[in-house]
Length: 423
Image 1: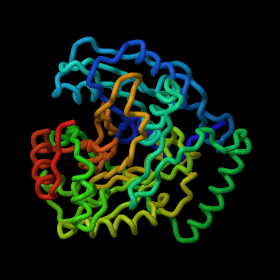
Image 2: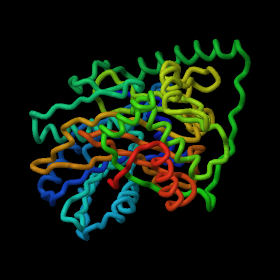
Image 3: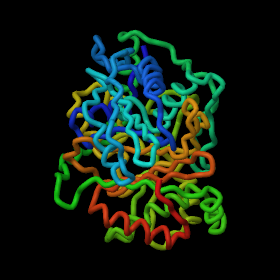
Image 4: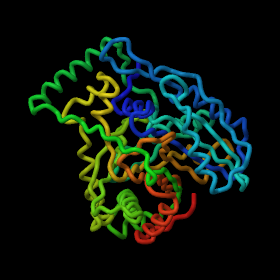
């Protein structure tokens, strides 16, 4: 029986209203209409694939929650009315409702025709089911079933380790019973807690929640960049494509009116050793000042990737899986949250470039926040991915208004020396 990780359970609690709700979303476009039969075939492959699962509670206290296959799925969601360019993201933002990784389907496949004659397809899933790389793997696996000769893979940035190697999806993890899992969990917890208490009683966590206020709202932008031009700009400044990305996101926040001279950046790191649909990530952080360049950020990021964020107050992280959910939420509240989030998803598999007979010229991955009422510390999130000769940057602002985000992005891109085009 495959068990939930600590990270899985953090995202499960956000689904239950404890923290900021997060759903992952992959978007891809074709220049021509996509046949309903092809979309239904993709939906069927996803239904019987790794996303087709749900959370079940253990019978033994101390054992972790587990994943159980779940063949129930939301029906293929199709829109008949064609969308214009400006309507794509507002349509996609609505697709995170009714996703339930515990008691119902945790994912949804949607499509809509476009005014230009093309099609936009969205796969949206609860973050409890998968992270961005896991979602991409689910799509790639489904498409590979329709075209078995396709393979996936792709290198990660040189200062952001964690690419998915082209291995078989089957994991080497051995199923364990609830009793065996509980014994392992309690052994780790009791040993680790005793060690932590020797250093003093941990501080009680803060319980303050930032409420929904007029200056907090969610706005999204999708931009594309030519890979050769982006990489050339990075090389000319002594940076990497990844550190140029981090520098750009920080610059956009400052251009949006962020008053502090220091920005704390959260940097997710893919930790999988094989391609699978999971939350298989860690988080590190760096501090960025106005004097930093893409080159200095490169050095900061390289050092930070060697030191991941630790569990609360030195306690073993497994304790979050055996105490009541509200206690666990209080202990882990704000974990990974900083002023900005810079998630470099890396190179997407070539599998995503073709769907049936259709060429996909634009693919994007991002997070959305369905039904958000409690905002995190994070003011701006950036998700960078590469497909072929194009980088796609998805920006999700959790502050201000859309016009401010667009204006700030334009100024920051000009200052950084990169030239965006619409998605």
